[in-house]
Length: 352
Length: 262
Image (cartoon, rainbow over all chains, first blue to last red; front, side, top):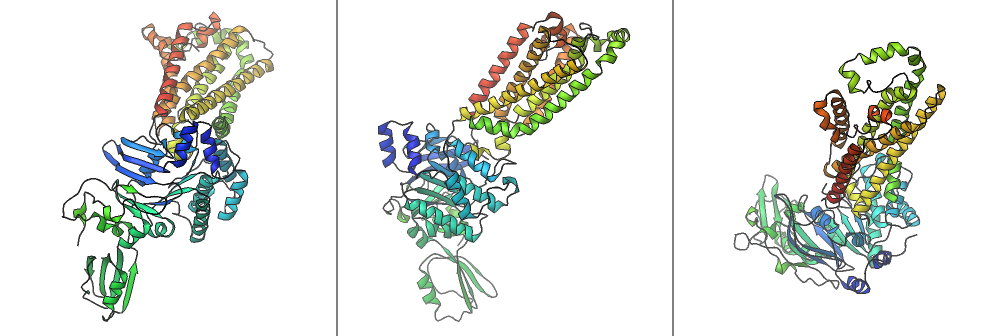
């Protein structure tokens, strides 16, 4: 059976010198510096500076096509960066890929497996590639996720294939989990169990990078987070800070005029009422509405594109270059929080 | 070893289908040899008067009415061509299938060096080709015994050995291509194997196309060259091995640096 997540470190120890091992123990779980990847002329990621400390649960938020998967693939050594550097636990992502992968549990956004293999065979194959026997842990995980190990993987529904991906990522108890959109296709009960498992691993000392386009998921489980859009990190800091500055979609029925409040954007009025994005204190909004004769009020999480619209807004109306230094630390303090956010090149896209 | 065993398991069904199909055709061909032998004179004359076809298939150099001559011309042509197609089929998608079937992200995020993955897959290709040839050779031996003939001489074994080497060379070239291709590897492989086979036929017909023998591995595996001389043409063999090694070096170089973005 697999040991604890230190198993990963023990594998690495076979290949690293004592000094390298010591630096790995104190190194950030993930650290990138001006990491850039172009596919020919097509943009992948641009100048990504990100630091995730060991023991953190880090959210990596962005809409589809923003560069989340590209960033992760560079970390995993699947693709070489065009420029910049990336390190995991102090190890170079380009040169020490094997040692890095021994310590990672990775769940891809689209889990595809070999045709005709049973779940049990696939999990055993994964464990053998890691030179470990994870059968007991696999049984435990399959029971908790309600996954039948005797089914053939090509006969599984999308949700069940996702479960196979989860077990593959978790069964060897790695030190670092990199999960790319892990909950898409999972029903709510299994999602809850999945996050319970992650929180247990986190309590045991593991680090988790959770890539997602679902803001609420990151708000609930992550301590720190970064927002990526069009290949650039546009915001980073503690989830609390990000959430407090995130916009909300507000629909008010039965009124045609808005209270004079700052932070209202994308206003649209219709026959039943008004609809707008609101970035500000919700209490202030409710207080301002107290003497209005509205019939209904909805405050919702908008689409991910909308949530961070305000981050793109240039202070002087022009584009600002560069990306924010995105750092988090284990003690929860944000080295570069909302105050240090820089603006993306397309701030002019914001429509007020 | 894990990758090798995994690929052997995935390839078992195809290996059985191709081995049984080619082996059965060899046995069926040899089963009619007694009838051919009875009409020795007529058949020899008929084959000698087929013009370009006579030289294309080397029928001017082999005695069709001898068991080994008949085997080399008729039965083993199935082994040579069928085996070439099988070698191309399994090797041309060996590396590329991981990307085509979206399993690359799963496989390559395990702590295994790319070169070990390439080596494991290559060994599986070699093993399957060798098993295929062993089975077909066994079928040939059984079919010789069934018609009461014994031709287990050096010429037979050299011919069988040349078939294995030729199949391995085709596999190496297709394996090299599979490092680059993402899709369409099978079409490329089968097309290449067929092209190389017909290239040898053309070289046999006309001396003007003699140089093609330096390209196609079917030249050193040709029964009309091996059986009368009881030897494999060394020059063509060495050139073929160089092609194979270059293709393999390319596969290792390219695939170990390749960016995997699905």
